[in-house]
Every structure is written in C-alpha cells, then in structure tokens.
Length: 307
Image (cartoon, rainbow, N blue to C red; front, top):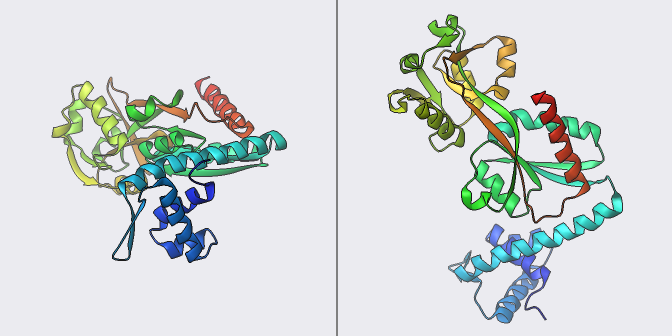
C-alpha cells in the first residue's frame, strides 16, 4: 500500500502554494484541524519532515520540496488520465490549455484562438502567456498541452520536448514618421550607430536573439546607443511613435501602427532579422481530440502563410 493518498498530495500542494494552513484548508474546503491531521499522517507514513513550522511561518523542508515535485507530477498524470477518458466519451468536446511566449501571446495567438473558437466552439480553451522558459517548463510538467513560442528553449527542457517549426517572424526596425531616416527606407549597418535605441531588458529572449544576429553581421552592439529599456512591446511602440528612438519589434506587433501610419519600417541593407516560431508539446502526454484539432489548425495556418 502506498504511504500517501491523492488527497494528501493535494493538501501538500495547497500548503506549499498558500504558505498558510488556514488558507490552504479554505481552498480545499476542509477544516484547518483536518488538514493539519492529514499533513501529520503523511509525514508519519513517509517518516520524513515535509513542512517547517517555525515562528508561525510555513515553508517546505528540502525533503518537502523534492516530494512536492513528484506529487505535482502524480496529480497532473491523474488529471490527464481523467481528461483522456472524458475525451473518449465526449468525442470532439473537451478542453485545451494553450501556452504562448510574450509577444506571440499578445499579438499572434489571439487571432489563432479566435479562429479556432469559431470553428470548434464546443472546446473549452484556456491560455497561459509567459516567458519562453516558463511556458516550456509548464509544457514539460503537463500544465500546458501545447504552446507556440518564439524564444530559444533552454537545452535541459528542449531535450524532453517535441519541437516543430511553425512560421517565420520578421523583426522589423521601426522609427517615427518624423525621423530624418524615415525617407531613406533602406539604411546601411553603419547608420545604426547614429540611432537612439529603445529596447527590452537585456535578459529578454528577443533582445538576445537580435543582438546575436547583429553580431553575426559584424555590427558592434556595444556601440549602439540604448537610451531607454522598457518592459513591454506596447511601451516601446509608443515611445518610437513619439520620436524617442528606434526599435526592433516583431512584425506581428506593428500591424495596427502600419495601418495608422504612425511609424516607419527601415530595411537594413543585406540584413534580415528573422526567427522561426516553434510549436512545442510533451511527447509523453496523452494527445486529446482537442489537441489534434488545434495542432491541425496551426499546420493549416502555416501552409497558408508559406504559400
């Protein structure tokens, strides 16, 4: 017999999340004494201390942190098995958790989801938008079924994921309509040293990707004048349109600005900054009917764009 129950694993997860016995009990609709008793029973059966209870502060011990990782995987697998049975029972009905990295989640994914929801209104969709690393990690941990990302996947995660090429995403150099370079349309790489740049922070995957491409094209990124670092593409676009500087942004993020003619795109002679977006999934997870339908929708969109 196992030394734990699924309910005890749920309790441990809730305590780890809430860091408070009372709040964890409320989340699980249990009384606080009942929850405490279950934790003590779990610790007794495992013969290890899972939770520190010093100075009225709740935290997991090192043993508790390790056991929680396995607990979350067990709970996710149980939920997945239930979803598989429901999927078999309901046919085309079901639910799907879709992930996307930041820029994709804000500018590209809404259009994909709107089309999918129109074609399959019976499928319940949930969306998570976060950094490439966090999205990839959640796919690996079975918290997300399928995701579209633009950044480089850390190798320790990538080796355990199924990664498929999706579509190309061009990163355009944009300036305000009033900028002296706006009439040029095409600039030489030496002209970049005369621009004031507005960027995302240096840890962002897009920023790192752009810097790598520029370096490969013999552009000294240390000579580029960065006057502003912002934490959102929207903030960058606004700053550019106000004439505060130039920026590299995804083409999918500037469709509205191009239509309204608030910015200008500059081409760099003999240089094109393009990245390939990726579709990622966990090869060990059950692929529901909803998953297959969404994946097929992405493949159809890819064929349409490429042709």
